[in-house]
Image 1 (cartoon, rainbow, N blue to C red):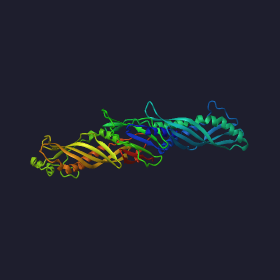
Image 2 (cartoon, one colour):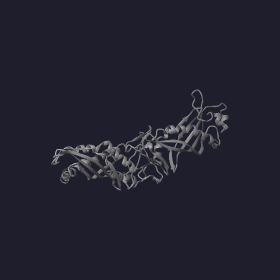
Image 3 (cartoon, rainbow, N blue to C red):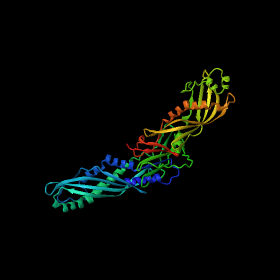
Length: 454
């Protein structure tokens, strides 16, 4: 079962893709965990064994044995293997004790060790678009049979029991356990296609790009995420043809999620309006008082225009969609903005614009995961360009403001940005994955979450 599951997922991940926004690679660590959990939590084998003690339609009574019961079902040992292009091959090894009364009047015990094998094919549900596993080719193989019956009864009695009950009845009782477990696993994909909120500004939905694919090492799932504005249009994932590849060196059997820089760019575009700020406090961080007197140290004409210090008000507006870039070990957020500074007036009069600047700057991004959402914290990388668009105080050399604007962005603007980013970005909801344990690595054009189990 797990064999087919892995194969199908791998196909989804490794299949031909135009420009996936995210790629999931499921290794044997997660597959083993999910199938084992499904077996244990559903108690399916115990339920099937209980049915084995009941009289089944068409099952003839075994001569010389009465009060047939099944007990002491062993905790199953599950072995999974990926089947390239198919899914997962699963072998469930378990055992049980069959008891009854022999014709001699004594208690009878037969201890059976068996393997249940099946291939679990990974498919994409046509109705929901979700990954799903479907079992096929289930077999029950008897590995060992021991009994407390007298040795002179063993050959004939055991052979009759095997032919009449185990070989004929157990497959019909045990193989449904495989199907039941797959139902349990498939349910854990149910929320994958749900639209997840990014604050109040929009949603992200992780849609499968194609049917999952399976290799000998993992299942791969390609996503074409839909980033939707609240009551607006979808934001396209505008890539620049960058390659999106997992780096080498991850432990064999491990699982990873790769998020593209284009996906993060689209998600942050949802927040673009929230990145506009108005700062009117006189005291901002470690900056000197925000008055025309402070500004006059950089632009002398301000002192002439405002001999009496006036309180400064600053508007920063992002006038182009933000863009996330990633190089190995470093990620930047590029912002194009206008910065307009005003001199406040008393008695409710509107402030007077002093100048309007075009400002282009980069922020460094640090990533983490909290409550299964991707978190970002930024810090100023550098001011890339500064140009004057208009001025009410006459011409001045805007380059003289480089240090002032740099400090202003660092102390006044970036804290606001970080507050906005606390909303977090949603991650794919699959197999009840706990992302909080993931290790994060910035790679070329993407962010890798190396997924860990508890």
